[in-house]
Length: 82
Image (cartoon, rainbow, N blue to C red; front, side, top):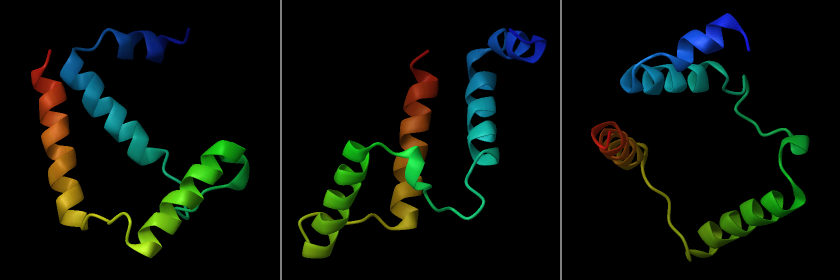
């Protein structure tokens, strides 16, 4: 295991969470498009079904603000659970 990974694993929980989100943001797709090989056939089927559900009104989307609020609430729940 590399030294940086060993150091990261020794961090306190809240620092690990911050590192996780920083790495997640850094590793985002440059063009925000999914590459076909990165999903399995079943995952593509599920994604296409969700898109169809949204188009027919069976499912709805959250606004960006609603999504941010839900994510912040979940993040706080996770941080406070330890």
